[in-house]
Length: 396
Image 1 (cartoon, rainbow, N blue to C red):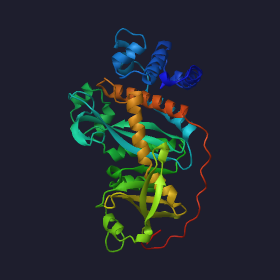
Image 2: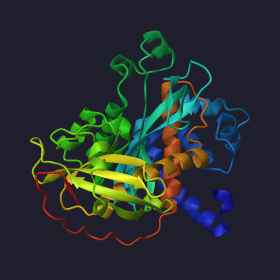
Image 3: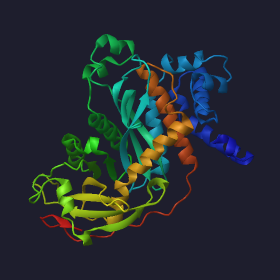
Image 4: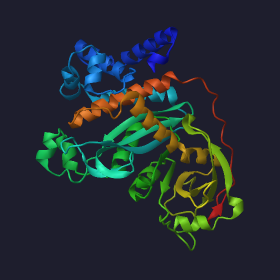
C-alpha cells in the first residue's frame, strides 16, 4: 500500500499510475470526468479502512458522496471499455504461454431486496445460502502474477419481473435473456479474452462449470485446453467398467501417485499426491488432443480427493497439468486481495451499472498493484514429450 512505500518509491508509484491513467483518459469524455475517475482510482488504492462512498469522497476532498454516486450511477462512461483497457493492461505485462484463464465466483452480502440481482442464493465467499449478489469473475494466472480481467453479475431466475429489473437498471436486453446459467457467463468472458488476443495456454474452473457438458464442449470445440474440476459422481462416456471418476480413481495403482509441490501465482507452496490417467479416445476428439483424468489426494487426509477432467495435446508434462489444476488457489487469493486492498466489495450502489463500474475500477486498481510488484522472471522451461496415447485408461 502507498503508506508503506519510501518517498522515492511513492514517486515511482505515482509515475506508474499516471502512465496507466493516460491509457484510460480517452474513455472519460470531459476533463471533470477524467479527474473524478482518477480520484476514484486513487481512493481505491489509498490506505483507508473502507472504500465506500463517504470514504472515497473524503479521499477526493469532497464534503459529501454526491459526486461519487453521480460518477457511478449517472455520469456518461462505459465500464466495458474500461474492462477492455484493464484486460489489455494486465495481459501486456503478465501474459505467458503457460498462463491460465481461471473462472470463479464471489458473493457480495446485501441486506435488502432492491440491489440489482440480489437474492437468497449460495455464496462461495461464505459457503452458505444468504441474501447476496453473485459475481462471476475471470482471472489471468501466470508465473508473474494474477489479475482479474473480466466480470459478470449473475441474474437469478427470481428476477423475472420487468418492473423490478427496470427499477434496478438491468439493461432490457439482459433482462430479456433471463437467468443465464453461470457457465454461459463464463463462456462469454473466455470468448472475449481470446478474441482480444490473450496469451493463455489453459482454462480452469470448479465443479459448477465442470459438470456442465455445454461448457466443456464450448472449450473443446475451440481447441482450448482445460483442467476443470468435476464432482465425484461425474461419469465418463466410453470408459471401462466403472464410469464414475471416483470409482476410476479407486483403481489407481500405488505407482500412479506422485507427490508434486505447486505454488501457483506466488501462493504458498503446497504438496499433494496426484494421479493422472489417459482416458479412452472418443469419437469427437480433435486430432492431436487427448482427454485425461487428474486426481488430487491430500497428503494428510488420503480420503480427501478432488477430480479434474482435462483436455489438451498429449505432449504435456505432469508438472504443467498439476500447476494448472492448482491455479484456482491463485484466483481465490486474487479475489481476497481485491476485496481487502482495493474495496472490491465495499460499494454502496444498488443499480446494475453502478455494480459494474465500481467492480471494474476495483479490479483495475488491484491489477495496478499486481503489475507494480512484477519483477523480471526467467522464462519457463519448455515442456518435454510424454509417451504416445493409447486407447484405454492408462495411468501415466
